[in-house]
Length: 153
Image 1 (cartoon, rainbow, N blue to C red):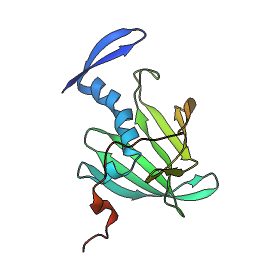
Image 2: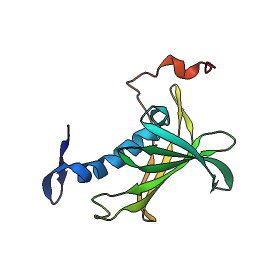
Image 3: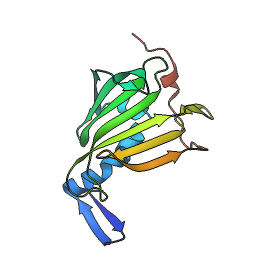
């Protein structure tokens, strides 16, 4: 609904309004990393200049959503695989002020039917927050088959 319970080492508190919205941003961004959620009606997409990612050019897309801050997605210009996502977040780890969040993805490989990055690095305000490697993925949802058909004109 419009409230959530946040449990932390410092105790529990009920979140609502803007604090809840801020806590949901990293979760929505993690979901958006799978790309297909940002193609829905809730997002507005715009082309932005690419960046260099490990010496490789990228294509940039800015995704805007009414309930969160804008996020910039960068895809390898040759393979179109996700390379970087950046936005601004507020987290319990960084305090009350918004900080730049940069997520870097590499080591793409097949996990069943999905080609996904196997390695991930997350920086908050330029400082390392998470380094992760995915070794297995079990997908419990299915994608609409229309995603894999030619677009009708």
